[in-house]
Length: 355
Image 1 (tube, rainbow, N blue to C red):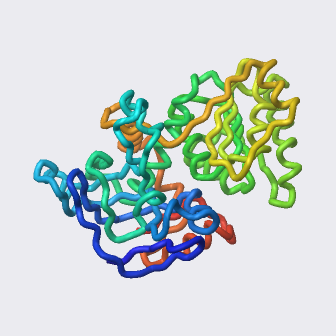
Image 2 (cartoon, one colour):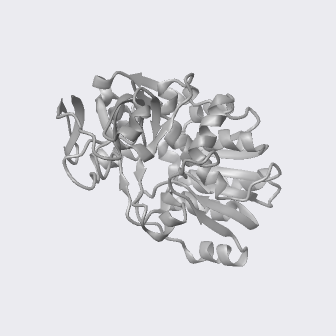
């Protein structure tokens, strides 16, 4: 089969590799669509995966073509989404059902071969059956959509809340879609590209306000300016919830600066490097009794209430608009074109899908 094999940092080969063989408890999925995640860029071009060689890609969906165990035979032929985190099932958090916080997890696309291939080996436990009407490109976006839902579920959030959000990439815009579903009416979203703001208004709510971050040359000045504008729009009180989707020291500090006393700050974005608070920012956390919450990944436990099943239900009800976030579609053999667009940012993009 054909696959993209990462042999070293920046060394991604499109080549023939052996077909994966199923083992007990595992299935073989023919990959029909895969998404490029923002985390794929540093993983491929800057930091590498946990070992080489590795087939990257953790946002993917497809059709089950083989299983090892006869008891799993009913999966063959089904279209499926794939939860990429493989929990150990033995640590104390796994025993509590919080598999996303597993202490000894494996992971498709970074710790073992993932979905940038024609076929992928996946534990049967990690499969989720899809509705017949769901398009594969939409199914490939279930992972980031579930991550966004999981993030909001970490908060105490009501329709009366006011929210400031820093960072309008795919996760940021998905968060605004979920906020609309949750009934939140007041959202101020700061980003560096007005087209992200337009997409937020198109897919989430035309009433949500976009705060332009300006171009990269203005990035250093934008942060404080965005805080001032949020404070102005809230009459100096600040928002009740502030969300950092950028994973940068400045944006997390901005969340703390613009949230009201007793408010909530949610850290969503993967960190781009070390983060530090100045003393005054830290004092704000203490004196304003701000609740700082982290979130990572999503809940999946084969329950109708877990993040993945709730995301599928929102798609079936046309509440989530995943396909409208796709700005680029490439054939499987053109993955490197999509990676280059995501890495070099030579043109506007949101979600890039390989199908």
